[in-house]
Picture (cartoon, rainbow, N blue to C red):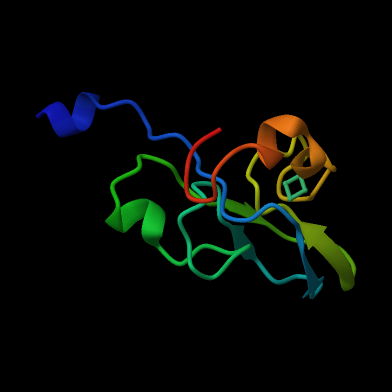
Length: 99
Ligand code: FES
């Protein structure tokens, strides 16, 4: 029962630089929110298996294009990198730990 009342876990820093990917128009992508996926920047189900209480962010693009997706999980513009990874807060954090 405690399992249900548990607050969601914090996202952890997966990497400190974004990953450039080609996004194909009309495809649904799942961006890793929890930072625990081994298939960054996308979800591999770790949020579920590690019982984080978090869920990936589903998104689509209108036109096929390349984009830099956030891996530090601190962006204010998810799933896209907004440069937050360059901040001292992220740079001082340990990979695999929350901010
Ligand atoms: S990788 Fe997270 S803001 Fe750039």
